[in-house]
Amino acid sequence: MTKENIKIIISYLDKLFPDAKTELFYENEFQLLIAIIMSAQTTDKQVNKVNKVFFKVFKNPDDWLKLWQKNIENYIKTVWFYKTKAKNIYRTCEILYKNDLNNFSTVEKLQTLHWVGIKTAKVFLAITKNTQVLGVDTHVHRVLNRLWIVKTKSPLETDKKVEKILKKEDLSKLHHTLIFFWRYNCTARNPKCDLCDLKQICKYYKKVILIKNK
Ligand code: SF4
Image 1: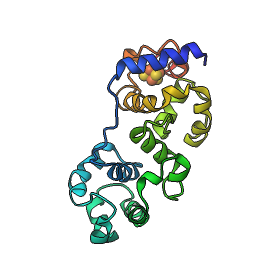
Image 2: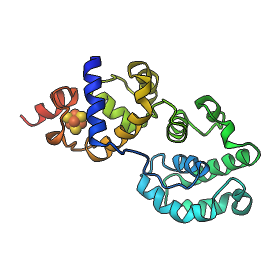
Image 3: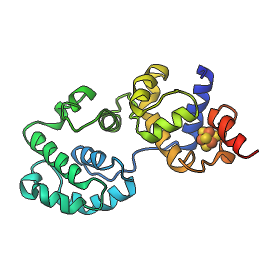
């Protein structure tokens, strides 16, 4: 992928989604971290539905004292893997009860919360601190591979390579525009290629969609 084509992709996504930002519901940074933990393998829509109720009683780490793990499970049981997530939320609260969240201001520090993976850490910091990092989930990984910005086999491999390819100053905004792009345009099944201006440079379009439609 040439630098010129990367520029074209980034400016196209910017034009498509000038106001892209997280669609997760939260009222403070602590709640955002919890919402990102909950959003693994679950849609933002479902997480928001739960959190509009859950976050009324769960505003800061002190609330774990009142709620306990079982109660957290009850609140979030419509979210995938709710038992594991309730346990991780509970453990996060135990730590953040004694340590200010602001002390976890880098990807490395956030990952010392062992259940916070690299994607969660990057998404959180990109949103709260505008840190120039790109959180790579399976969808971001898929789109970057479709466009052939990277040629990788897993989100983790993409994560390792992509920040070396893209300009640092583009990363935090790109995280949001890519998420909007896979959610609304370059969907996993039936991407809206007919409406997409990236057809001419998209490898997936040339190698899969065009051949399928012949
Ligand atoms: S042409 Fe299709 S597959 Fe390629 S980026 Fe656009 S929507 Fe996605």
